[in-house]
Image (cartoon, rainbow, N blue to C red; front, side, top):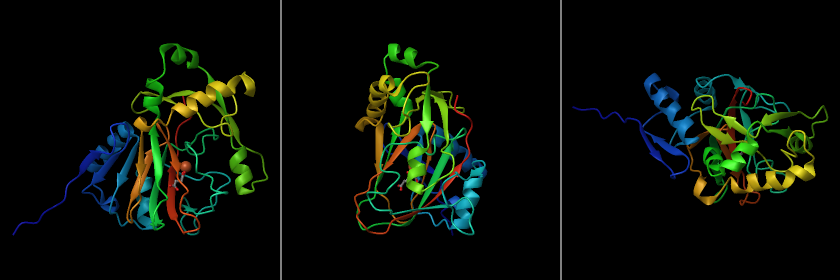
Length: 269
Ligand SMILES: O=C(O)CCC(=O)C(=O)O
Ligand SMILES: [Fe+2]
């Protein structure tokens, strides 16, 4: 009698970004498989793991293998599972995620990685998109690359503070507009929209806006992204140091629940 043991298969999702990882159970992942998945993540910027049965305890355990599980100020976490954020449908007018962004970039040390496990999905819609910020940087001219070299951008948490009703101090900081990934050594464009990144350091908002808008708008080119249609059992993770993401809100009032864990990162350099 033979027993078939499924083995790890990693396949690209688009040429630009993302891979699907099959043949593994994230709750019982071996160390060699973890290492293969780790390098796939850093090179592909996001991974999809279909057909997982990862409960909240196993989600936290899996997340802990990547580094320190972090909690972000201004956000509220799932009771009994510190570190798990319940992402829910807040209505199209209130959604804090329907725009291209990296997670919590206004922190001194923004999360390196984010993991999202599908818990309840709308009948149709509610896709999430990712784009590759290595490629966005590579596409710039040499002149633009040298202009951006050493430039820092102001990152503000004002929008998140307003959305979450936070009345303490609004976090803000400065980060390089081009960051170097600590694992791959590759450079990635690191910018946000007008609310997240109002200006370059040492420049006015009026001076900064046209260039920041250009950089922001050309980042998620259709040939640099992947759009994920969620299925029950999906777990997706991404690297905020080389990808931005965008949650499409096209499912009205239907319930949509995701459980998210973020892993601490270094100060961008
Ligand atoms: O709901 C989603 O698909 C992603 C939301 C998001 O931006 C996040 O969880 O960081
Ligand atoms: Fe996000």
